[in-house]
Image 1 (spheres, helix red, strand yellow):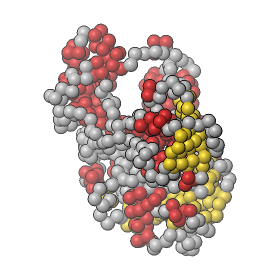
Image 2: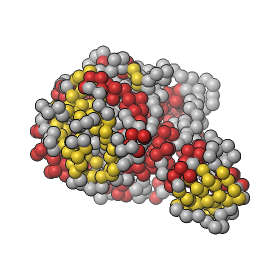
Image 3: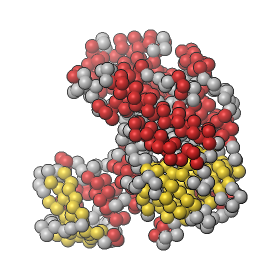
Image 4: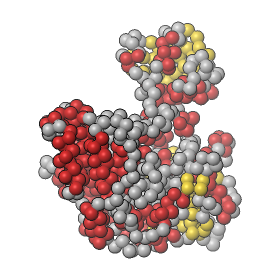
Length: 638
């Protein structure tokens, strides 16, 4: 890389950005305080310092003090996003409701991307969604115990399979307590498979893209990371997972959890592949998991995940209204703040229902006219009745990329134009584009005029070709960074802002950060053996396997399981619950040793509690030659 490319201070907002942001502010009731009243209602206490983590800081509320200082948005922040950022700055232990029988519900908000909810049962706490990290979950439990009286955690409910709703579980309970029956773990059916699929098999690429989406590599400030829309930021802590002891597989299941009646609604394929809402009939309280929040959510998340079903999502919210709204006084969720009062809750649910249905229906209406995803996204905006509802604004998902998600779900990535069926990859295409347009310097010269004119989208599209054709072209990189930066300053969506500003930062940098190599992480001990072999399979490098076939018997002693794995056509196969008489070798090992083998921290000779017999060289070579993935790889450059 050209050593002359170096970090530079982010620019001021351009006149074009100032006009854009001012016009948006004028179109919205920015001064409406109703959400601020809801979000601050019932404050009991706040964390003593706002800083969580010993030695390594996992969470620090003071990084966003600049947001608290003024209700007027800086020139470099979309004013609507600034309003959401100020709401997400409200932090502490909040009472949702309590009654004269000592029952109560409290939420800890503002110390993680998500909320953790505590419900007082007869003998202990029922915990809903134990956050993203062990450290933030433990701090939240300590805050509740300190101010509400200490109780043991007797149940944990995972609302769904996204990591910010389960990975802090070891901060509120232990595997020993679960194994002994002192703590129940309740989740929707399919939870474990979906949690592992998203966070392990696709984990490395999602983690890298999440660095962009959540602005993890940006400095916090008016020209950097301000908010994520769904919450302030992601914590930098320890992840964990305890598998469910009970699964909810249908709507209408009622459980008595420590004297608290809970009626579940199974909502698969909505905001997560495995998700559920639930109602507390005696408390007149409804939990909508992450199916409703105070922003338009993602039908496709820019960090990468399965496309979500907008039609099913809308219908399940409608079912929630039919099942529970008449008996609900308060509606709360896994992010943001509650809605108080039966009418307020019902209206919120109806508008959330209509938002996802509208995007679904209008996308497919225009698709059936032959419009492509880009054309539909450019044409659609929220209907007038929802446009001024802040909880339907695109602070997290946007109409633009949600439209493309609906199209993809029904029709796929191909828009039908044969010119797009087998397009050239970015580097090759970039070279040809730049050649056709008269060379890199000529393109940069013309793009500079477009940046000056505020045509940031087009300038970024053109300059991207130059950077992929000539990644060391300093002027192209810096001009592309300038265009992306202004787009970030204009973005109402927290993730869009973070993507744009992270891209700009990396274009200006001398090189990428080295954060080491990816591994299975804190979720691995909860994975089934089959899941571990699936994780192994995507690490195989075909060229290093040769053309032969072989099998090995694997006995996982701590789980008393027998498995056969092998190679056929340079592909891993797995047969659980059996042994192969013709296997080349046999291995007795433990699940922990198997994790170490997959992560490359041990080999067959050094793995603890592992014994090998037979012709083991093919298996030794397999573990020695597994692919390893860096946590940081290029995105805005080749």
